[in-house]
Image 1 (cartoon, helix red, strand yellow):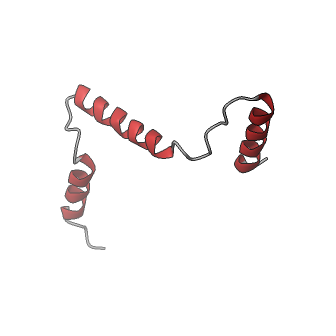
Image 2 (image 1 turned 90 degrees about the vertical axis):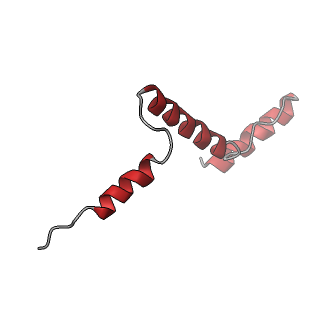
Image 3 (image 1 turned 30 degrees about the vertical axis):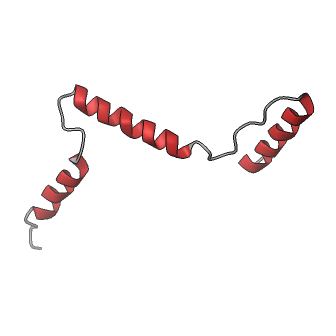
Length: 70
């Protein structure tokens, strides 16, 4: 059963029982991404690392590193 089919079935059951409809699939995805990012920033601060710009700084170091010739 797909996510859409399960959502439609849950909506139908909620309507039959007079309950509130469940949230649509994917309606909270961005909120989850933001909370995940905030959690990792918090962990970085607690560990004493900078919370912002770590990926960009690491990529910059990696791209500036001299490459060996084959």
